[in-house]
Image (cartoon, rainbow, N blue to C red):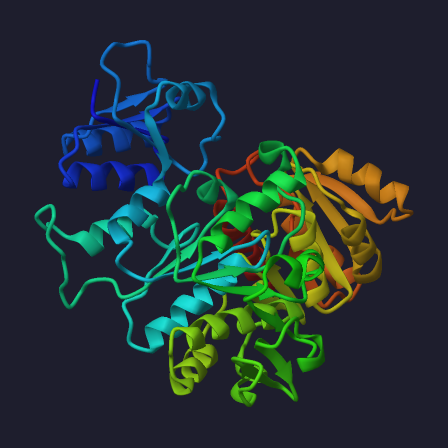
Length: 472
């Protein structure tokens, strides 16, 4: 039995195994699945002397037990093997926690939330990088956290501090509830909480469990920034978070407490204490991305930068140059005055509602995939307000059709696949003189795609093909 077992052969699991190997551990990777892609990775890792067992669950009935089990983010924390490992006293941690142990001498900005965290993470990293810091984005976007640890630790001798001109200055981490749940000691310099709405309840069971997991990260952070415009976070407000920095796009009067970041007269304003004078930081119009939610993301990113001591000039430059995030209200192309927009990252009702609120109407909406639990009321109301027609794909199509009927919306069609949806959307877009064709699924992708990125890329390819044919 090896000293350490990594469960889950995703990007994070592979990075964790490589980090452990570099640090002198005897390590084995294990994944209950198998596929041609996994077999290819198995061979690649075998060349690095990292054994990989596919279609396999580790056996903990052995007398020689591992000292450590590291879990990839996608592996549920309560599967039998992990419950047993903890009962046996085997240290069991997530990949993010492993990375933290090798990077804890470096300050972290850790961003969590139901929605908004990817854009906030990417924009925060862009600002820190514009200020001259080596500040990689990692976790749910960019690198796996252990990849950053591999770069940040180099081939140092154990017990010696590693520092070169290429070493990491700040870690900008996007953390899902899964990654926080499996992190024991992670304590960021700055913690950001973007939004809080029901999500991942199939895994976390109750809203209270989900909240407490997110709250753990913020409690462990030295400085905290909250989106004060989020209804749930606003309600818990000062009762739970007495010393936090709050944000609001609505102005100084809506700021919770006496310090934070807000928008007034088209500017992001900072107020760092009850006695400090408000200061203009950056014009909101410098941000290219549409939607009030992106102004909220801007406030939190600017807040992190200012708390890290970054100058206004670097912030302004980064905000002006920031292109946005792939798969989140990403403009693909325009044909006959119709904008085709990829919002594949909208994997729940709240994110999809925000997507619809951010685009012009009338809209042709493509929705569906693998449905999640949650309150669809706001999303359905937004569909009635903004869309000329809805095209339904994936395993949720029939259930979504029933819900649309129940709220009195009948202009939908079940088309099943993305290929059919894009072709039909162009046709309907012209028919209804629509401003936008929007892919904003309100669903996970796993019924038809490996992840939301692949779904978004497929939409992009189909849109470009479709528009090319139309122009011929």
